[in-house]
Length: 473
Image (cartoon, rainbow, N blue to C red; front, side):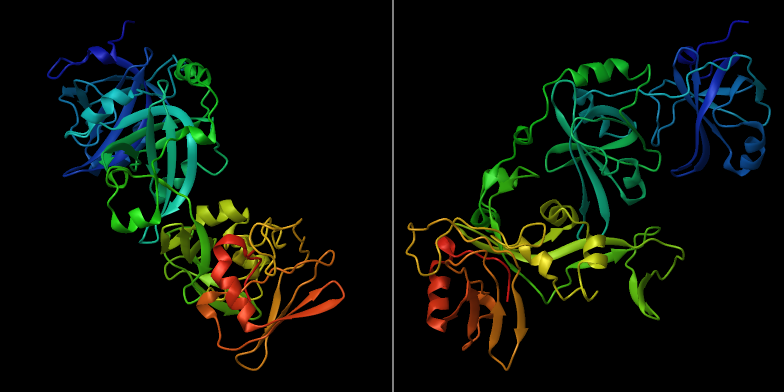
């Protein structure tokens, strides 16, 4: 028996029998709710079909996903105009008189891609919008948190001509691309929406979006071979304009006004302890979780859902500084985790004595410039000691214990640290919390050294040149 090819179906045409596999099913959320299907034939051509959503129980009893049927009795009409997944001149309307007879050929394709090129994306912004399939090589992949607390997945893809486009997965779709996806992997996404932000094209997930990581399929082999033939991705290959904090505050630089991403070389000089350094979200609804004491155990609960997994996220308010000035900003989860190599969940559950989000743990303080290493040890320094004039430093001291401070009578503070061998001691202090009178005692080999307030002020004066920060008192 000869079946009509899907690609040849036209509006108002008398229906011929088609042999297809049912790939997808969904309910369209446009002006009118519709029960939608995606059919593919033996040639790999696809067409959409719609039915009355009120008859969903009937069609569920007749049509099974991924099953193959000989379909007749449909009506050929114009293409769908709301979030169409297929670029076709027609679509099908199926009612209860349509027939779905099981097909003998079960070898029909089980997946459909219609990959767009970068050059065609611009034309897909206009209505009626056609949803977009895209394939590319990963350059960067990370989670980002919006100002409203939503967690998004941002994945930057490079196509075969090295043109870049960013994919944004909204909270309900962030699981499609996880942290195991690294630069160089191949990602194929389907049913995304083309949008434009700050003059740049991007792809946003929809409720129909799916993703495939390194898909080894006949439909993708050609693209994968071309992408794998590209030169290896280097961290420096992503060209972003460089700016300063002064330009950021003024908003005067042309590259800032016309770019979504840019680089600023600065260092963290202060953590704001009056602000929480982490928050917890529900794994089901992404709403804020609330701490609750359950006997001796602290748990986090959601106002709507039970049986949840807390999602811990960094949110550290800091002051950063470069040669042009300083500015307050917020470092979110992926930024802090990339510095510390410690997840927020591990930090909260394994490395702190209290879950109070406004008590900054010692290990987190190492993000301050020149602070502790990722293993919790203070970082060695190449800077001179406080009693050396700038430019006359010897081999730096190697500190083996982080600073431990305990409060005595106000405004006195005492802190001790131990050196591997006698040498110059590097003093840490926080100028934002500088008290009028205090004493700091350090153990330097077998000798105890006292530093006066005047010497501490001297370090403050020259801190940008040669004071080594190793923690906070």
